Image (cartoon, protein in one colour):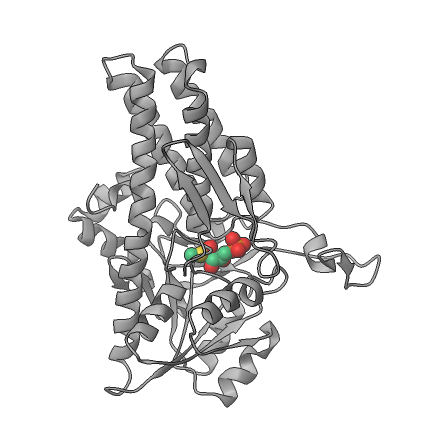
Length: 380
Ligand code: MRU
């Protein structure tokens, strides 16, 4: 997709994001001038999708460092500021683990510079921080392409040679949600590039309509054959059309393979099981939180009632009704056929052993590593 979700100019420290609350009717960018703006944009869902949230959080810190390098008297002050601000950014949205892990990575780097750098050159340390963030930006698209390839191969392995597949997806996991290509949508893009995609169905994804507004936009833009359905049509779709597989993204995959993703994912997984349709989660290794052992430990964000009662300024629910608006739900590992990562496809319950083997360490060592994502980048 040519539309850029995040525009970052390292040379002048300028960061702009596409305001996703306005897509598809308006394409408009807002400037993020620092951490406060970054927090607001993430919280208001002007940028959303676990990887994109993580990148905008880190970049908003980078912007602040580049624009005000003179405010730091010494490396302790730099360390304190990075630590406080990264902790603050994480509070903008609590469920997706990506921002938490990247924040830990940034804080670790700040601590490393404070303890181990002999020089006191603050500009040099800021440059080092920016390089760390830039590296993360570059790896995201590469990881998504790997997810796309592994996912397409996995799905095609289970269908007759040369036949085409039909995929159902939920929410938006594409270029809007990442630095480009996408995770679950990356699998769909890869199938399309191979000429093996018959059709995609995408759900509307109430209440925020990421499917209708964002995924549909990407599919139409890329000329991928696609049809939009309402969330309550999934069972009927599975009963009446031949769906080869469901592929969704993840906000957090925990140690036993349970997965938090956009509200509605769980019910789709139950329906897939009932209809004997493989159900895949596509996510980079940076979405896996090995510190949590069960989905029950994942904090589920609850969003304002207004997202359910209104569409823009128009009220669509009866005045006076109360609403429950959880943004995510947890799909148990038992309903997930496989987790498609940038390192290959794993059985959900084996995810930690799978990662340990990929990195070339034992599972015990993996558990000791505080920051999974920092240690999973193969060329870091
Ligand atoms: O509330 P959102 O729009 O941030 O939720 C997004 C999702 O649930 C995605 O599936 C997930 O973040 C993965 S995006 C690659």
